[in-house]
Length: 298
Image (cartoon, rainbow, N blue to C red; front, side):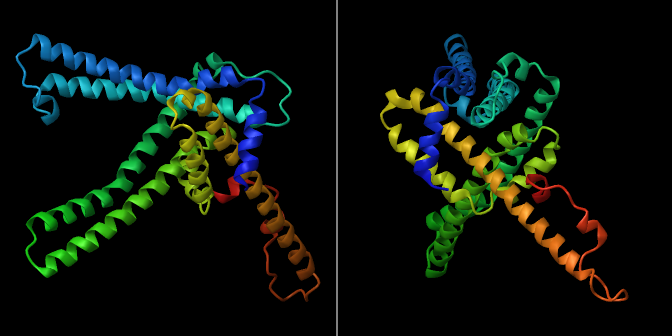
């Protein structure tokens, strides 16, 4: 997949719908900022009207602060998850080349109960997997910090160096997991009939060997976004390019699966010429396989 072709074609896809796509793409970010500012406002009111030490807001000793943080996190998750799915669904429609009908309205996507439940489940699983994948990096980082601060000999320095290396490797693995989880909402939009568990865990196999392309894609837009003014303009273009990449990967897998099935059929047909008592290489079930695509990779 060539980066220049993907970015160029994503601009072409947005030629008549850039404004509407930009508004939808900014909705998850807007909801995140809204609840963050609401949480900060509550903390400011608590500090202004209450006799509370500002450091207690960071130590977790204040019950009101803990309750506010929990409620804010819950609301961000409850509101942001359907919006992320709505963005993924719209971008999949933008990248669908044979589209002959208008875009699905935002209300139809958000008010669908099944879409709401699935988006919440996907968000929950991605957060759990992302947190678990970050645990090794945290353990290795704390180990390195402990031996750097309290170490006094060559052996302690040796352990600290190895802990730092393992921390870097663990962070790299965590980054790969996070990139993999970014593809799950788009896969859910492409395959609404598949279960959430199958999509989440199947995304690891789907994104295998493709993380470098996604990192290059995001870095190319990150350099352009250094001028903050261009961020609202480039966000829909970057997300459309990512959605287009997912669509290309799905077609590549579908094409690869069709080639494998055709090869199996040819070998099975040739093996039918062998004597009756000899065991055939493929069972009749393998010869009757008709499905191809992402579903076979899960």
